[in-house]
Image (tube, rainbow over all chains, first blue to last red):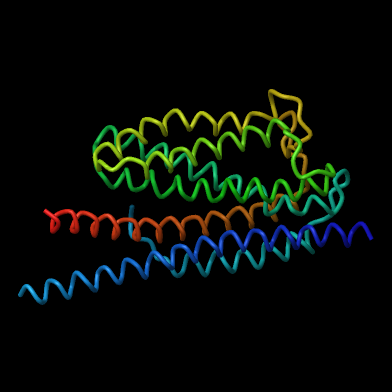
Length: 50
Length: 224
């Protein structure tokens, strides 16, 4: 019984680990799409100026 | 920062994580004092190591920036501090889960817990300071000086188990390793996996921040 409880805690720890890393990657992903939109805008602006 | 082969590093990290999980949960023997609960150690110690490594690199970046005024070093200091806070958060969360199994409570103001929380607050302060300064020149210099003082919390956290009475377990006692060779091997696999994940994230975040900075500079120029 004790071993089962401990295994649940290890599972919770692993899930917490990947939730935090995954959350960080999601934030990075949002920032990448923001940057790529901005780059597209700059490219359009430069083409218009030419 | 040198251009790193990002995808092979990520694949190596994930492969090592799979092997690490198998060795941690199945292959490594049970620890006699802590029982099965000690297995969280194979997740907790590697993230703590990466947090210290990241903050050490951040200190190097800040000192190098103050000496050379090369913005690449400022970027390195910023990126590694972000990852240092991320991995210090993981250290605190995983440590609390382990503390609940081993001590029956998530938090009990143990010296290691307290000093690691102080470290986390110091570097959260560093990031807050960076984002609060609008002037580009000052945004690099003032946090770099702050970083040198904030780094004192890293050795403080590391040596807290030596100088204060603590329940926190240690793997080295009297110059001797207190774990079996199988446990050392398992720990090493997980340490390398976490280090590879850190290298991947650092390379990725560095390039992203560099692109953001170039865009900021471009927008400032066109605004004028």
